[in-house]
Image (tube, rainbow, N blue to C red; front, side, top):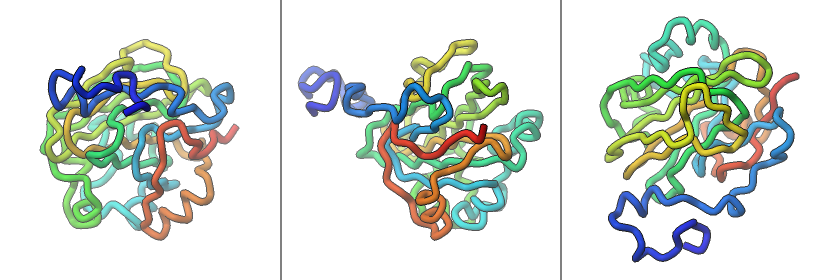
Length: 228
């Protein structure tokens, strides 16, 4: 509890206040904070990275309805990101439950999508259930410092009551690693989608993901780079 802004559990009014507790920035340093081309983990999570949707559906996501169009519910944005790279951050209930932007950007839009609450455990993601495209979620589109757009999709899951935006506001500039929001109680997932040929994921993460192995990361750790 010494890692958190409020360390005394008696100061939390209810369990959700405790569950969504804010962490001290010093406990989650942002990798190479001044280098805007370095990408960082959006959350404390189990991470998979893929260079395309085809790779993601080959090695990890088995739901037959998983397409960018279905995920984003925005055909124009899906076309802009077609063939792009994905990072899938799976948060378990025991994790720090706030999520952050993996890259610097200006928020262009925030779109809530009503859905169900399947668990995001691999036992369902690796089966023929359309977890990510059926679940309640929020699509945040940002403009990068390179001029292209990328999307951060926060996805609710089993027992998640709501997705709350904190610093994610339309037209707001966010620094790499800046908090975007939090999930109330339960498991959840964040998917970052970048355009084709704009990102190079770190090789160890790619190697694990191609073996269908998740890598445990903490928010702010380096996960890849923009291709300049």
